[in-house]
Image (tube, rainbow, N blue to C red; front, side, top):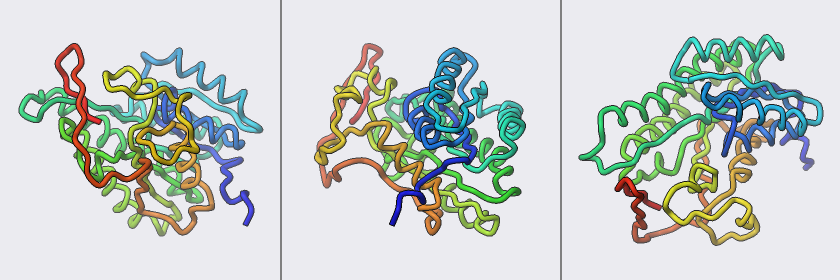
Length: 274
């Protein structure tokens, strides 16, 4: 066996939420392997998005990275994202639905606004990106779609009811679409990360280590690095996963059979659980 089947070189990938965290790590993996990458983020993150694209282009062996501001809950924005990718690179081979978001509170205290925000971003945003961007993959020569779910969608998490529901929806969305688009040569899989040391998680009150302080060779741990999620995403997007579709891979470290729920409360009284 060689490593060539794990390569995404010369492909074009669209990565939503690609300016930071797991999305940035995914886009960087692709770029370093020689793929063209289109990354998107909200207009408010334009400066960070453009800086990330410049960094990815510099890291790429023979590809380029293009930044596009996009709100994935806005179908016109998503259509413009797809058009930009096709115009720049001639087509799309891979879509990574990474953009998402969360709100946390006890169920009885959840506001309608926060509930709708989480469902709209995670469920409807993935629907929009897959139906519009993914259509270019489906009607061209096929390719791969990788959805970022969460262990919350596999086993549920207290105080994260809408997020758990939304990510469970992504798991079933993945399996159902894999069946529907298989005859169009599109593989659809998902990755369900556990707690990953991103800049966003680092700002939370729970004691999550910095990514640089995590040793990938240590097996007995609860926290992962963005690069570890990115490696699995690249595998799913590559020919190495040619016989893999409709699956959700949990990337969550050492399994726990039973443990006490650990909580931390921030200054606003919001309970975070780990």
